[in-house]
Length: 182
Image 1 (cartoon, rainbow, N blue to C red):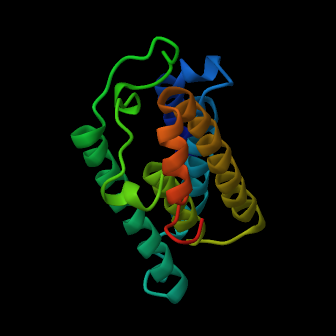
Image 2: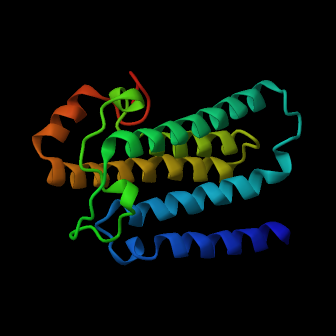
Protein backbone atom coordinates (compact mmCIF):
# COMPACT_ATOMS: atom_id res chain seq x y z
CA UNK A 1 0.00 0.00 0.00
CA UNK A 2 2.83 2.39 0.86
CA UNK A 3 4.46 1.84 -2.55
CA UNK A 4 1.16 2.70 -4.28
CA UNK A 5 0.90 5.94 -2.32
CA UNK A 6 4.53 6.78 -3.13
CA UNK A 7 3.85 6.03 -6.80
CA UNK A 8 0.82 8.34 -6.85
CA UNK A 9 2.65 11.17 -5.06
CA UNK A 10 5.71 10.86 -7.29
CA UNK A 11 3.52 10.75 -10.39
CA UNK A 12 1.86 14.01 -9.32
CA UNK A 13 5.30 15.56 -8.83
CA UNK A 14 6.43 14.32 -12.26
CA UNK A 15 3.25 15.68 -13.82
CA UNK A 16 3.91 19.04 -12.16
CA UNK A 17 7.51 18.95 -13.42
CA UNK A 18 6.48 17.93 -16.95
CA UNK A 19 3.09 19.56 -17.49
CA UNK A 20 4.26 22.00 -20.18
CA UNK A 21 6.10 19.30 -22.13
CA UNK A 22 3.13 16.93 -21.95
CA UNK A 23 1.13 19.44 -23.99
CA UNK A 24 3.51 19.07 -26.94
CA UNK A 25 4.34 15.62 -28.33
CA UNK A 26 7.01 17.12 -30.55
CA UNK A 27 9.35 17.91 -27.63
CA UNK A 28 11.80 15.61 -25.92
CA UNK A 29 10.23 16.45 -22.55
CA UNK A 30 6.99 14.75 -23.58
CA UNK A 31 8.73 11.39 -23.96
CA UNK A 32 11.07 11.94 -21.02
CA UNK A 33 8.04 11.95 -18.69
CA UNK A 34 7.34 8.32 -19.62
CA UNK A 35 10.96 7.37 -18.93
CA UNK A 36 10.66 8.89 -15.45
CA UNK A 37 7.40 7.01 -14.84
CA UNK A 38 8.85 3.68 -15.98
CA UNK A 39 11.96 4.12 -13.80
CA UNK A 40 9.76 5.09 -10.85
CA UNK A 41 7.73 1.92 -11.43
CA UNK A 42 10.90 -0.20 -11.70
CA UNK A 43 12.29 1.24 -8.49
CA UNK A 44 9.08 0.75 -6.55
CA UNK A 45 8.43 -2.77 -7.87
CA UNK A 46 11.93 -3.83 -6.90
CA UNK A 47 12.12 -1.82 -3.67
CA UNK A 48 11.65 -4.88 -1.41
CA UNK A 49 14.71 -6.50 -3.01
CA UNK A 50 17.15 -3.57 -2.97
CA UNK A 51 19.02 -4.85 0.08
CA UNK A 52 18.26 -8.55 -0.29
CA UNK A 53 21.69 -10.18 -0.74
CA UNK A 54 23.26 -6.76 -1.47
CA UNK A 55 26.70 -8.25 -2.17
CA UNK A 56 25.63 -10.90 -4.66
CA UNK A 57 27.20 -10.52 -8.11
CA UNK A 58 23.99 -9.21 -9.72
CA UNK A 59 23.51 -6.66 -6.94
CA UNK A 60 27.11 -5.52 -7.24
CA UNK A 61 26.46 -4.80 -10.93
CA UNK A 62 23.29 -2.99 -9.90
CA UNK A 63 25.14 -0.83 -7.34
CA UNK A 64 27.82 -0.09 -9.93
CA UNK A 65 25.18 1.06 -12.45
CA UNK A 66 23.48 3.20 -9.81
CA UNK A 67 26.77 4.88 -8.88
CA UNK A 68 27.52 5.54 -12.55
CA UNK A 69 24.06 7.10 -12.83
CA UNK A 70 24.77 9.52 -9.99
CA UNK A 71 28.20 10.43 -11.36
CA UNK A 72 26.85 11.08 -14.87
CA UNK A 73 24.02 13.39 -13.87
CA UNK A 74 26.17 15.44 -11.50
CA UNK A 75 28.98 15.87 -14.02
CA UNK A 76 26.56 16.69 -16.85
CA UNK A 77 24.80 19.39 -14.84
CA UNK A 78 28.10 20.94 -13.78
CA UNK A 79 29.32 21.08 -17.39
CA UNK A 80 26.04 22.47 -18.71
CA UNK A 81 26.08 25.23 -16.12
CA UNK A 82 29.79 25.98 -16.55
CA UNK A 83 30.06 25.86 -20.36
CA UNK A 84 26.61 25.68 -21.90
CA UNK A 85 25.25 29.05 -20.87
CA UNK A 86 21.53 29.53 -21.39
CA UNK A 87 19.00 31.67 -23.13
CA UNK A 88 15.23 31.42 -23.29
CA UNK A 89 13.98 29.91 -26.52
CA UNK A 90 10.60 31.22 -27.53
CA UNK A 91 10.03 28.22 -29.80
CA UNK A 92 10.72 25.81 -26.88
CA UNK A 93 8.81 27.12 -23.86
CA UNK A 94 8.56 23.55 -22.51
CA UNK A 95 12.29 23.42 -21.76
CA UNK A 96 13.86 24.21 -18.42
CA UNK A 97 16.52 26.94 -18.43
CA UNK A 98 19.43 24.49 -18.04
CA UNK A 99 18.28 22.73 -21.23
CA UNK A 100 18.44 25.89 -23.34
CA UNK A 101 22.19 26.07 -23.76
CA UNK A 102 23.71 28.58 -26.15
CA UNK A 103 26.89 26.56 -26.66
CA UNK A 104 27.32 22.95 -27.73
CA UNK A 105 29.12 21.44 -24.75
CA UNK A 106 31.94 19.20 -25.99
CA UNK A 107 34.16 19.01 -22.90
CA UNK A 108 34.33 16.36 -20.19
CA UNK A 109 31.70 13.66 -20.55
CA UNK A 110 30.27 15.44 -23.56
CA UNK A 111 33.48 14.72 -25.47
CA UNK A 112 32.46 11.04 -25.52
CA UNK A 113 28.67 10.98 -25.22
CA UNK A 114 25.99 13.41 -26.35
CA UNK A 115 23.43 12.65 -23.65
CA UNK A 116 25.07 11.99 -20.27
CA UNK A 117 21.86 12.82 -18.40
CA UNK A 118 19.94 10.28 -20.45
CA UNK A 119 22.83 7.87 -19.91
CA UNK A 120 22.29 8.49 -16.22
CA UNK A 121 18.63 7.52 -16.57
CA UNK A 122 19.61 4.46 -18.61
CA UNK A 123 22.01 3.28 -15.88
CA UNK A 124 19.43 4.14 -13.19
CA UNK A 125 16.80 2.03 -14.97
CA UNK A 126 19.14 -0.92 -15.48
CA UNK A 127 20.45 -0.63 -11.90
CA UNK A 128 16.91 -0.74 -10.50
CA UNK A 129 16.02 -3.60 -12.85
CA UNK A 130 18.93 -5.77 -11.67
CA UNK A 131 17.63 -5.69 -8.09
CA UNK A 132 14.94 -8.26 -8.99
CA UNK A 133 14.54 -9.58 -12.52
CA UNK A 134 11.02 -10.59 -13.55
CA UNK A 135 9.14 -10.54 -16.85
CA UNK A 136 7.42 -7.29 -15.82
CA UNK A 137 10.64 -5.54 -14.82
CA UNK A 138 12.31 -6.88 -17.99
CA UNK A 139 9.57 -5.30 -20.09
CA UNK A 140 9.89 -2.03 -18.16
CA UNK A 141 13.67 -1.77 -18.58
CA UNK A 142 13.35 -2.48 -22.30
CA UNK A 143 10.67 0.23 -22.47
CA UNK A 144 12.98 2.66 -20.63
CA UNK A 145 15.80 1.92 -23.07
CA UNK A 146 13.61 2.33 -26.16
CA UNK A 147 11.91 5.51 -24.98
CA UNK A 148 15.27 7.02 -23.97
CA UNK A 149 16.42 6.41 -27.53
CA UNK A 150 13.32 8.26 -28.79
CA UNK A 151 13.88 11.11 -26.30
CA UNK A 152 17.48 11.49 -27.46
CA UNK A 153 16.52 11.46 -31.15
CA UNK A 154 13.84 14.12 -30.60
CA UNK A 155 16.30 16.27 -28.63
CA UNK A 156 18.95 15.82 -31.31
CA UNK A 157 16.52 17.11 -33.92
CA UNK A 158 15.83 20.13 -31.69
CA UNK A 159 19.59 20.69 -31.30
CA UNK A 160 20.21 20.39 -35.04
CA UNK A 161 17.49 23.00 -35.63
CA UNK A 162 19.07 25.35 -33.07
CA UNK A 163 22.82 24.75 -33.53
CA UNK A 164 22.88 23.60 -37.17
CA UNK A 165 25.95 21.94 -38.68
CA UNK A 166 27.96 22.37 -35.46
CA UNK A 167 25.70 19.85 -33.75
CA UNK A 168 25.69 17.52 -36.77
CA UNK A 169 29.51 17.48 -36.67
CA UNK A 170 29.39 16.86 -32.92
CA UNK A 171 27.04 13.91 -33.46
CA UNK A 172 29.50 12.37 -35.89
CA UNK A 173 32.28 12.45 -33.28
CA UNK A 174 30.37 11.09 -30.26
CA UNK A 175 28.16 8.22 -29.16
CA UNK A 176 24.64 8.67 -27.87
CA UNK A 177 24.81 7.07 -24.41
CA UNK A 178 27.89 4.90 -23.80
CA UNK A 179 31.39 5.82 -25.01
CA UNK A 180 32.68 3.62 -27.85
CA UNK A 181 29.51 1.47 -27.72
CA UNK A 182 26.15 3.22 -28.25
